[in-house]
Image 1 (cartoon, rainbow, N blue to C red):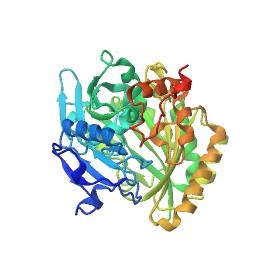
Image 2: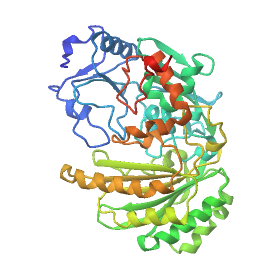
Image 3: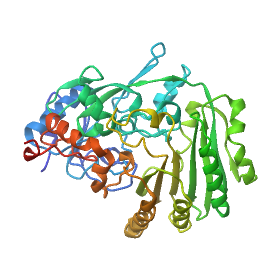
Length: 452
């Protein structure tokens, strides 16, 4: 269907970006370097604009996608031929230092909200890349540097403002629309266009954090030390095991960490690292939380081509370690990162049915991000990534992390929500029966014959 700017409501106050607009190529650029060409991008100036676009798309039966910061790893939010409602201009941040709350509009990136909260000595669980959007990250889980202390990002959502498929602006919290509040903390993009989130904040002034890198030849030793550290870690410590394919063709291995506790006790928690000898790179030091937020910014540059695979692990066994390291050694793409994130702590203590997010049972999260530049390499690189995922799958536990599901993994969406999937489909039928909000990791509405 062709969508013309003149067809949009005359009352729309934002910027309309058509393919002939000089800013079209920049506006359609997303983190994942795919050449997506929407019919129009409607950059909403305010919440009323979001409502107008949704009402118009519904009345004209126009395919509609909603995008914010554009860091969706599956690139679903910028589809070919659709009308795209952009919330990027909704960039307001309000910090209430007394109530310890942050009200954040949908176009805000994590680096901005972290900096605003840090001025009051406050923080919450956020993305480890500053350019990631707050809304997309938090609505589908949100694994971050402070998660073992404070839970996932979705666990800290206190309220949302969302425009549903009927054009209504709804306040969603534990008292108002509690069923939608449950669903949107884990499957949020399926139920409407979020215009703002209110997040719980915590007193955090300084942390001990950074990355220690070692030669790739020490990979097994580093991994074994990582397993020792995680076996005895308190909630204040979040650690990642890394294996990196670097742009110059070399490999490196390392441990990233954030210790959210007294700096004097950090050395004790990290003592097993001493057995590895001097690292080739060491950025671990006491730092402000705003510095921590950008630790991964340079590792996965904007506009490269990426393919991902991820699994939860109930344990980090020798067999799982062997499978992971065997594929790590075959990395040849220039922007490839392998992560193992230590979960548990506050993430695992929250009741599994408290939110739609499912991932509290795993002790670790495995992720490979394979990154390259040339479209000519797509077939080879995607096949390699899929093979890596298949090799780790026999060692994985049930479930899938929605924020890590790539475009070719729709079959894993029911697995990602487990027992809550049928409830989500029922709520989808109630709030979005035509599946307007489908350019996401989509939960389809429950069919008529399933309600009988």
